[in-house]
Amino acid sequence: MDILLASGNRHKRDEIQAILAFARILTPPDLGIAFDHDETGDTFLDNALGKALHLHELSRMPVLADDSGLVVPSLGGAPGVLSARYGERPGGVPLSDRDRYELLLRQLDGIEERDAMFVCCMVYVASARRFAVVQETVEGEIAPAPVGKGGFGYDPVFYVPEEGCTVAEMSAQHKNAISHRGKALEKLKPVILAYCRPNR
Image (cartoon, rainbow, N blue to C red; front, side, top):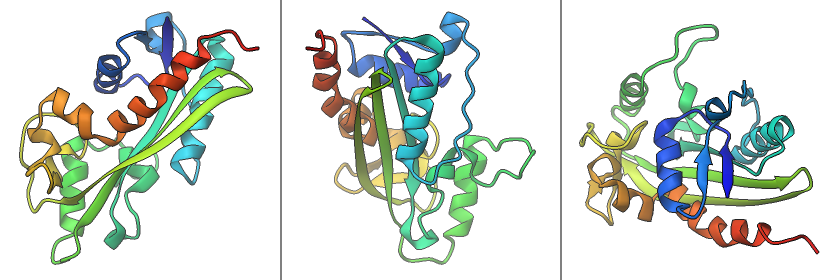
């Protein structure tokens, strides 16, 4: 089966493809679909569901969408839903991954409380009125400095005490097993397969 991912992020597509091996994960550019959805919601659910329904309306295909981000309670929950645009000025040039996590480290300078969590809200849309939602987290803390060369986004500064390393030090397989996105997808996988059956 083909599932259209509401993202052009190849890292994200590859992570999802590895977990949903029974399907072919496509992105809008693969099908020549011009897709752009403003993530203006106040929650991860608002953004994920909005993207999924919008792309389904354009494509009439099964759609998978997620909104993920880093939540740091000592910063009032920031970056939160703005994680991908953290520190970006309106109309300005987007910051690189490194610029964003270096900004985060500066804002946490001198703060002892460094607990954090990655949050992923994942939505699968079979049709406009048939969809499923899973939201998952992975708990950790912000490291004092970046470590590791793998992953993307905030992975180099997200330390998982139970694993004894940052996410950027993990193999792709290890990351998929413990990550917020990996856990959400594993819970959603049987639901997606159930939606493939005729609706009675």
